Amino acid sequence: MQTDHNIIPALIGFLIFIIFYFAPTLNARSRKHPSYAAIFLVNLLLGWTMIGWLVAIMWSASDFKFSGRAFSGITPHMKYSQLESLASMKERGFITDEEFEMEKKKLLDS
Image (tube, rainbow, N blue to C red; front, side):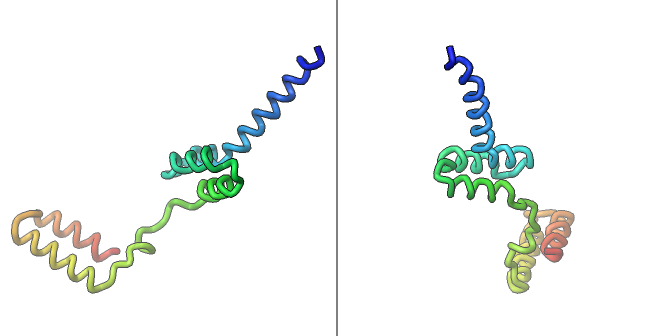
């Protein structure tokens, strides 16, 4: 009979362990992280290694809202080349004047 009384604390302990183990996944899901599925897989498959769990928790806590400008790496020469390409597409009738202006504005603002 004494083993029946030990089941409840064991189940509560197991539930606490599961919540702690999947904390990175829960964090990523609550933050609507774009890499939620990948974080879940790392957490599920490699979380037991503790390094995998640490990677998953740091990844889920990472700031995923970044400016594309910091990573664009577009040089002025590349902009000029892309602008020439846009102008050529406009001259051939592949894009309209409005599309050309819109893409040119995007290119020059980046």
